[in-house]
Amino acid sequence: MIQLESVYKSFGERTVLNDINYTFENGKTNLIIGQSGSGKTVLMKCIVGLLTPEQGKVLYDGRNLLDMGKKEKKTLRREMGMIFQSAALFDSLTVLENVMFPLDMFSNDTYRDRIKRAQFCLDRVNLLDAQNKYPGEISGGMQKRVAIARAIVLQPQYLFCDEPNSGLDPKTSLVIDELIHDITTEYNMTTVINTHDMNSVLGIGDSILYIYQGKKEWEGTKHEVFSATNERLNNFIFASDLLRKVKDEGIKEEQLASMRNALK
Ligand SMILES: Nc1ncnc2c1ncn2[C@@H]1O[C@H](COP(=O)(O)OP(=O)(O)OP(=O)(O)O)[C@@H](O)[C@H]1O
Image (cartoon, rainbow, N blue to C red; front, top):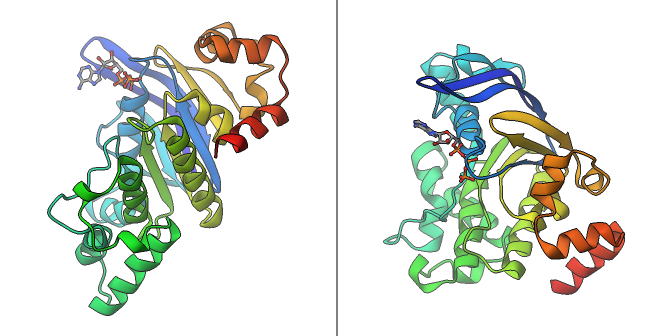
């Protein structure tokens, strides 16, 4: 679980995060959503320690990141997995070598055990057959799956995904969403996802934090989105004609789920 308590971040005179309080629970896919420039990336950076808030607490299962010394931070980093907007794979390494990379850096396991662990993770994302290929030889969706395998290879407790679906078609995005959701439940991780993708919101939004101009404007679940009365949230979520129709014509959640299933 990650708890944010009264987090503030400014750049010069400009307050970009204003009194953010929120709990990201484990075993859930926690989504941060909001307009461009609302502060999602700055918030994610504050949570992972790339930026330091001026005020507040970022509690990792009770441990405040902002009070940690170097050694404690290093321990915490080992408990984090990250998936970036671009898959950020090493072009000159094979798929297997990419997944092994964190193990080579941080684990004391034997070479054989490191290979076994990396292959286990590749199998989990259904890519064992591609282990000897190079990133340039596989599709964008496959690259994302390699990035997921690499992110979970050290068995992280916390998983951070920055726009995991960017550049992917809707069908592949669905596969990536489901995969992230499944591994989150399976390994009981605390997963935090920054996204613009409304399909993700409606599909895997176990818990949703909507930020508007640096403030928490709304929080809820994918089940609550449709009945939400917050006008800013509605304008944001239902900006697309299709989704507005879905809301206005009262299409039920189950119907939406079966539409998603048909896409798979
Ligand atoms: N290092 C920085 N120095 C000054 N201002 C910054 C810095 N980083 C971000 N900002 C400002 O903070 C605000 C929030 O930016 P942020 O990148 O968090 O938005 P976002 O919600 O992630 O947007 P997008 O969806 O477009 O990625 C923006 O106005 C941005 O210009």
